[in-house]
Image (tube, rainbow, N blue to C red; front, side):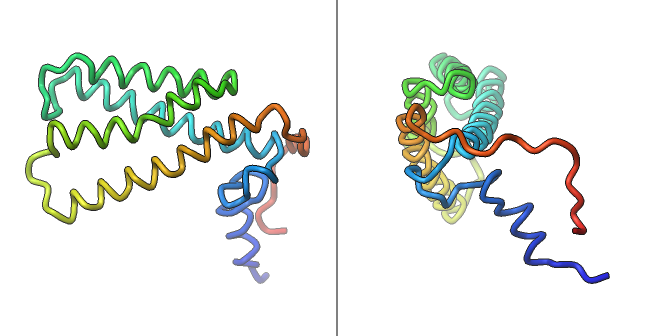
Length: 161
């Protein structure tokens, strides 16, 4: 039996229905956009809940700033609200998360023991995340006019056929 590695890669890493990250917003269907919104909301929600817990535990450089856990938990809540309602306002607020983390790093500094390249990598990742967040806001704005898309598939998929 011979495996189709290209087909497996395309199916599990870049499936046009489940992972449409390189598809322009104007060509997305609601089912594709729903998958992308779910993954974004899951990532942002988990990230900011962990950040809020770390802020409450005093593990961040600010130690006493109450606004940090409040903002973190509120951003996690808006990410869940965005997934649930597809609201453009919730998407806009959840998209501000990387900008807030970047501003936090500029005001309070980075964690101790980080080298220059570590800090550069963090800033590059935050800027890339901020750029992607703009796509999420555009996706929320286009949601009402998107075509419905394919119905979800039921059952298990066989990876060998």
